[in-house]
Length: 476
Image (cartoon, rainbow, N blue to C red; front, side):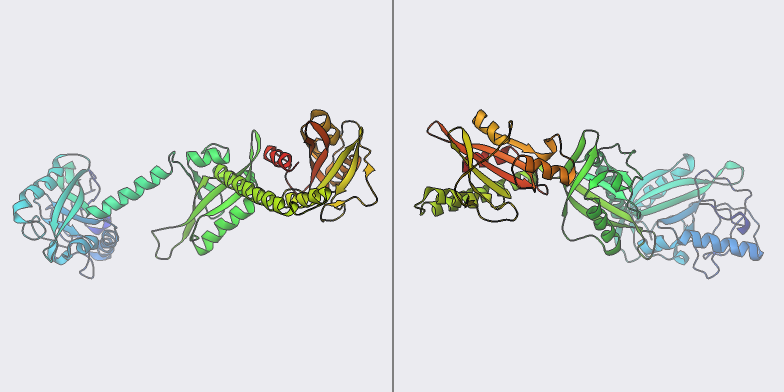
């Protein structure tokens, strides 16, 4: 900061800055502001002459306003060590007003203990002989007699002809400086390669800063993701994510982390991931009213943990179903009644339809099934067993040939194309029209093949996977 050249004041406050000509302040021992509360009073050099008129007054007012508006405490000394400037932040920290501070020689006896005054003054004034800023820590005295540790940055002020005319010193309480440094260090550490993702989004919900973890999770580079809508990166689940970000902007951060299942578009294809997310609303600290700058979004990929938890829950439920089924079928006198009761228990949460085909000679005969047009229990086929006209390569026939299990889906059929294609695919295989995923497993006892058990799922459910095969074989 430098003083206005029209003010008649020579106190250039930046390091090594030379004023146009040696002037002086208003010549009074008190502050130079129009209301007696300003921070400029004594000039840094001893040149004579005074500025007058409205230009000088407005310049002094501007200088006083600039100094008093600073967030850091500031004082200045002339070449002889006399205090020439003292702003409101210095008054707030130490309790000494500008009227009490300006005009004093050094800090001895009032702002510093006399035992420390010589060392403190020497280190401060040493800045006159060195270019750039010097950083020191001192224990200063407040007006009430208590001590406060401050961190100072001091630099010389050049006068006419480039000669040192004094020193200015900006200082703040050490704990406040340390808090600031910790905040900066924390923000920098978060944006490095930590074990969770950090994304800063602006009020338009576009990424402005992305750390390395988040870039890997989103499938891009740290710079390539900036400014892009989240919808370009997230195929499914972006609406829920953007709704959460918009809510944080409007209402503030939620009280607990939230989990979002999203599908990402990557070079290897689409990936489904679960992100446990926390949010912070970012507001500008430089305004009286909080102005939102965006949202800080922190997340971790918990897909593996969630899938393991889901699998454990599924296994626990299926084990419980089989245990209840065993207790129920043990009371059945008719073996076919026991079989259909067991299938009813096994069907819950596992599939939409189940078909039981038994071997009669070389043919498979439909013996029991759930209703084809609506959910319902597994019942024996009315009117006796009916041979099933399965074509060559049918999954049920393949299960018999392999003496194992066969999984298939409508998407794997040559004629599959949308809903109509899936219905035609199911009808061709003598299954209910809503079937889109099938799992056929062979029924064996004492080295003999007794039949085939087929579970079917509709298109709105996921295809059968290896854990489902193991469960179906357990049921069989």
